[in-house]
Length: 329
Ligand code: SF4
Ligand code: MG
Image 1 (cartoon, protein in one colour):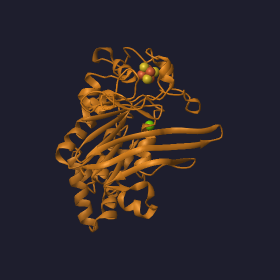
Image 2 (cartoon, helix red, strand yellow):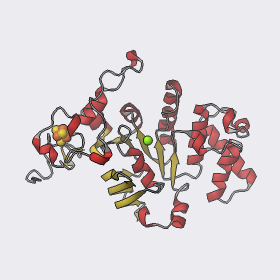
Image 3 (tube, protein in one colour):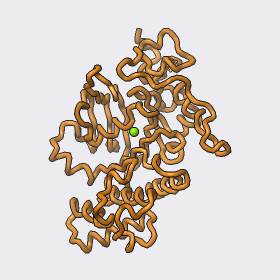
Image 4 (spheres, helix red, strand yellow):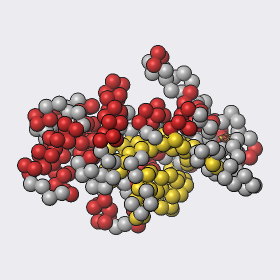
């Protein structure tokens, strides 16, 4: 009952001229009330398509081919556009990588926040603008009563991202989805925005789903992690389980490729090989072509198995402690 969001066996596919791409292929995870969950993976892992599916922003030739997305117990896949519009922006809000894509260049930023407030709440112009000033202060914008009158181009990238976060939080959503919120920003500003997200989590009663290619960002910001690869979940568990004692060979690869502070962005180690061509996914485990532990059985899908303390891992190296007798062959 305390599951705010339940994604169950989600399948999001794209019809392309060369064939069907299963960008998301059987993804399941939950976000509890008040929880912070990070989805991490390289580009092409299906993490953004997962978040866009939840927001119902998948465009043709993409479509949700199967599964359920239960938000507050209701399957949003089946809602009409009109029914869903009432949910999006009020209970569910999204922050993108590029704040400019969320801002209208020809309106002052405060007016934009005021309008998103007025779209869902009964406030007059003056009340809405006053609330916008308060929201700007909450996201750490100094001199908020002046900044609300600025146009987006007058603000730095970091300030713009603070504005889009203020706009997303305007209607006190129960779930805030952040898709690579710091990727376009330089390192110092990235750290400030992550601090802000952590700080807001303590003050605002909003669950967070953070999408990123950087497992270090998840480790600093979230309590739970979903590691995706090739459109599937490879490993899922608490931040401690997944980042301090990773089990899936792909997670181990992601963690050993985090640059250390002394090395300034240089990678210690990168995972060999490339992300598989989505039109020609290997049978079985998608990580097989890059995995140094690959065995014959890996041509059969391992499925998520529970290893320790509720952690789930899709890998034949581990036994399913919940169903030790089950074999898939
Ligand atoms: Fe490697 Fe096999 Fe595990 Fe996939 S299932 S990660 S190929 S050992
Ligand atoms: Mg992306």
